Length: 338
Image 1 (tube, rainbow, N blue to C red):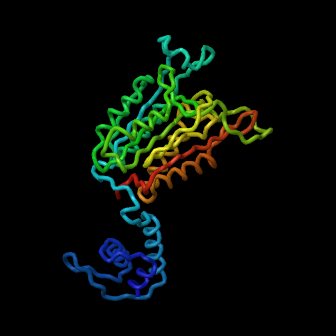
Image 2 (cartoon, rainbow, N blue to C red):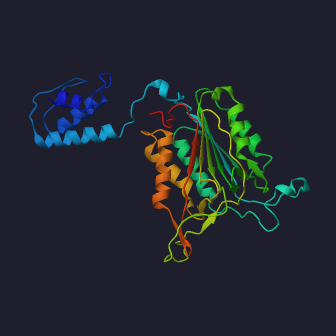
């Protein structure tokens, strides 16, 4: 009866996997319904219909079942080498200066605007490194790159990505709509970065390429007006990661996913002590969900978390932030190979 019950709820739907059966028998042994012989064989001496036991085994099987990844056909998922599922490049922009070469003066933010030091960005960098190393990714970190160096660095690292792997680029910087800044205060088109990620390694043809951008896409925060709210950042020391622009739409590329900290026209917020809302939430959700959710599901959880749980009260109203994902992924991308 127990085996029929387990089969009916799908707990032992795969006859080649005996792990669930062994786990159930271990629970039964605690209820004195099973005795183990010497070696690996197990025999059932008696099976009593015990309501307490049935409740316990149901709870165990239900929790175990729901904690597992939904089974998909192999052709629906990207194939990744479990020994090296991917390479993650983290470009961490902390200390900014004004480019002295007059050839680039027209691209600078302007004499009245300077790019502040991004205090707290190292917290994001370290969290990303820890998160992706846990998943078996090779992590490369580059700090404080000029606009001359960003794309060549991506091209260099992507050339080292092995077969059956993925490539993830995380850029932590100031930004404006469709662009991120080098530390010399010169912007780089995100379009250039996307093209570099897709052109320089044949091993990544048909494999997932992910770009994660912690930067602004405008100069204002999204607000939920509230006249009763007082000017207060809760002691968090929030900063804005960028300046405004009117840059147009970026073309899409196949097998590419871009996750922005915010939608176009608005600012991204970073806590000076705890790191940015976006990166910290993303890493938390990856650590919690990667074993059973694919990457796009995790991104949805991040958007919900920031929308529902993060806010910055000011005298003009409650300021919020909404991340944005753009995807041309053609399959499901699981960060964990388990």
